[in-house]
Image 1: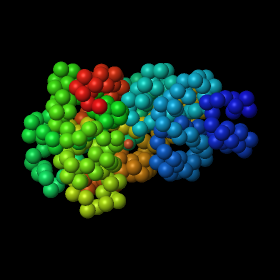
Image 2 (image 1 turned 135 degrees about the vertical axis):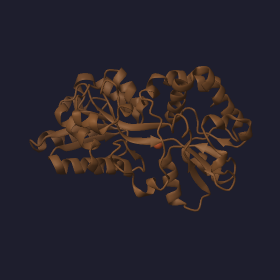
Image 3 (image 1 turned 180 degrees about the vertical axis):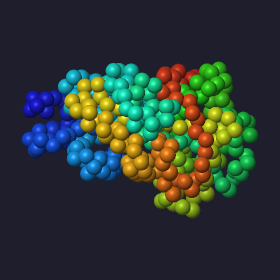
Image 4 (image 1 turned 90 degrees about the vertical axis):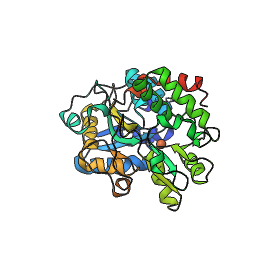
Length: 337
Ligand code: FE
């Protein structure tokens, strides 16, 4: 244990946590690697510990470093569970053999099949929707219809987009490839690029700030960023439009989790996964970041519910991983920087 603590992949913080955990008590404990930040996971872990007596130690970092670490640690990993905020990353972890299949009637009942791995190596725990946000002083909802229609010439010089480097846009395009094929999707993306009012922006919030300032009229963002921005500045002239309601539905992604292949305490990790899919945790898990519960039996928070109900695209989110490489190449060909 001591030796492994000097392993260069382990941070000083984690070393202390592990030593403490080993010497503290016989209480059951699991270790989670999480790409969701502490404030978005700790309330659920605390509730789980209260219910079960199982303590949860966690390490937070970006997805890339967490996956690299899991891979490098191999059999010696202390991690029992991986949490990420995009299906593409969970798909990648599963493809690398870092996660194990979990057979659980509870998870199958709580999480719809399109929000989990067909081989049950990971499960969506909250839904993140990527709708259109528009300037209410310049656009009427009746002007809007679909993602695809934003490629039409009437939107010339009126669209803002976040950079194509962000996995959220890569996932969106991967899903569009699954729906339309590469040729049609490339045509649509080229139309978007032709309609850009400005170079692609670094993040969703900046894109909405450009829309609010009148530098463009519409953009595509994850709805929780809209929620955060409007909470800070309720007078901004922005609103959400739910596109594709007469066709494929709104593009959704997930944050979710899987049990690691080399988990030392897989049983307790499955318990945590089941707990996170339950009514008690689903409210918390989605609400802390203004996301949507993955469990369709659970209502959204009042703030989120006020944005309206919408049909989700029911295509399996695993597509975001499977077609990610194609999506990145396509966006590059279409000139989306
Ligand atoms: Fe985000």
